Image (cartoon, rainbow, N blue to C red; front, top):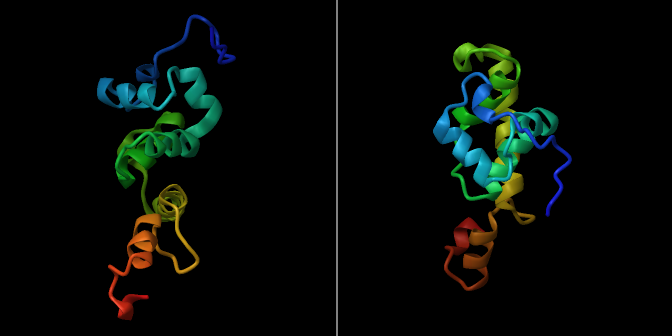
Length: 122
């Protein structure tokens, strides 16, 4: 038996504003299986887990999670707040993708190592 530290009677993540069945299923596959856990780890970490579980990066679900945990409509994110979240999102994408010292993804670095990337781009 695996103990997660959360109550046996878990509250579904879909009870949180803006989170529907499909997004709930994605969160569950990523190991975020209850509202209590989502609130505890926060939007940024939950989205990191989604990316590590194979979800394609997309900015809207990232800020949707942030708005959801604040009890706000998903489209309430605007202006400076949205710009700041975009910076965090972009940094998370790079972190999860992995980059080398030249700012290339692991995949691009591997292609360079076998001579596939044009020398001008190195």
